[in-house]
Length: 302
Image (cartoon, rainbow, N blue to C red; front, top):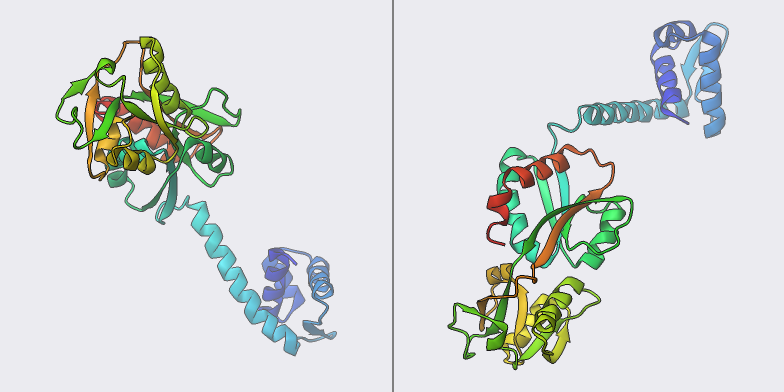
């Protein structure tokens, strides 16, 4: 059963005459009759009573006629809605973002995007890069803001945005808490909370590089994966942590953030946007254009 068979049946049901119905459908009467016969065979029920002079609906045919009419109306409405490109309809935009981007870049970017796209429902999914990439590949996310791994799937397009600066997170009561800025010499003997490399490779490597370039080894108190866990351990006085500067926007009690004076070879944490290759969606194009047009404003404080 397909929509064309339903259309043929409904026209015959309205005209109760194969000749007139065939004329309306711009078909030969024999072809129209064959469409109806195939529909009846497919359903396993007689829909029409036929005689040499009269055509009428059977009891089952009358019920089917009403339901078929409704389906055709729904089909035509759906087709019309999507042929217009959903310009007047609300649509959902699913954005994936790592924690720092969800608090820094993405809100600033949406500040420009939302006023020009008022009919958009925006869902922000905060997660780690290792979890965001499969969701993008599956089509569940439209775009992601992430830290690009060394190897990227060929089906994904990536654009580098900027490098996020880092700060030192210390307990609010720590001896360095009131300092505006510190260098490694100020805390190299302190216990450190280090991000786990499996889920946060860039953050892990950056922290380790700070020590490696200075020729010293960090005093590792604990490895941790979740941002809130890292900050909770810092707040509890179990160690210090190097974290993205955007963490300053988090409501993390008992934690102070201090600017870091780092070796010039430490370039910060890379932040990129990714989308499925071949995606021509206008919202994606608009988002990429905003990133270009307002780059200095959007990345200046990261």
